[in-house]
Image (cartoon, rainbow, N blue to C red; front, side, top):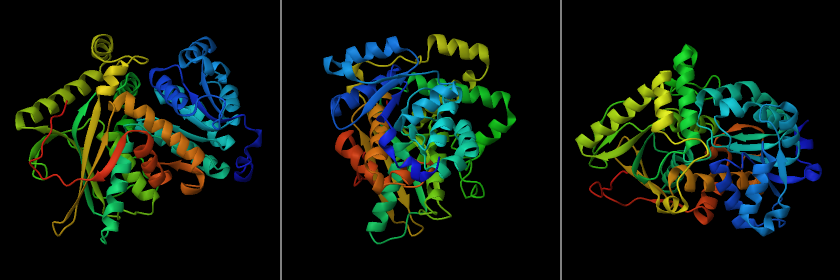
Length: 424
């Protein structure tokens, strides 16, 4: 199929399919779309998954008007099923993880059928394999594949995009150095995110190539563009004079930083070829920073060996399909600060905030709006097929959507260093 055929949508029954809709985050995406569009209106959307029985139960939970909401069933590892899914819709919004187990066939099918696709993936080795395996097919057929459309890595990726846009609006070149600091948050990682993280760690333990890939700060950059001044992600603590606080490693940095660097490369080095970027958590005082760093190190160390991992999965970590109550999600939030720096000492500061917990309430809205952006803002986003990032594919239209509909805010940060907050 060529790009011209892809753009003839008359034969496609759906505009958007939420794949994995009976999982915890998938259900939240379905609820969000139902609240915004209902059923049978301008948006021709559907829910999909393996079990028709569970999908019918979800329809009943959505409300009486959802009785006519279309259902798509299939096996995520069956090419015929995933091909039929991809051929039936303009956009697939995928929530089924770990993606290395349940996502490859669907990405293959979307690339082949010229179907746009977005997901919540944070699995760097798998994303690298998808790019290497299906980029040429996606380009040929016009499929726009966009990974990492949740808390990892939209606040990072679009936050840097917004900061650099602000720098240019002030009449300056892009900042050659940007620091991401998670200043405060309330909420938890989703069970799917945890499952994906554990899968990656297990693969790295057994495969030296994967371990080397995880250590590469430019692992997701295009071939021939895997170079720059950044080194490995932060492992220890440090005092951050910009925030007058101690900082510690951020567990999602290994995903987010690679996405931001790929964005820079895909946008013809819009941030500069010498651009540097890092991420950390604001811990407050030195003791809290040490405790945060030690806790993260212990978790990652325990997640590797199978016996310890089994204990973590059984007694400590959230399970896939489980998550916080509606009240807990609505009490959650996140507050990210980004500081762009010039060699002359000048800075550009922005903050990115969300009004729901990062792992579920905010993530489901970010993913849904990413899918809608691919669907409805076609003229304003990347128009050619290939593997993109949120910033390089969706950019300003997605920033506007997230601020208007999803409870996120991108704005200048006028706070001075002693304006502190607590990380939860």
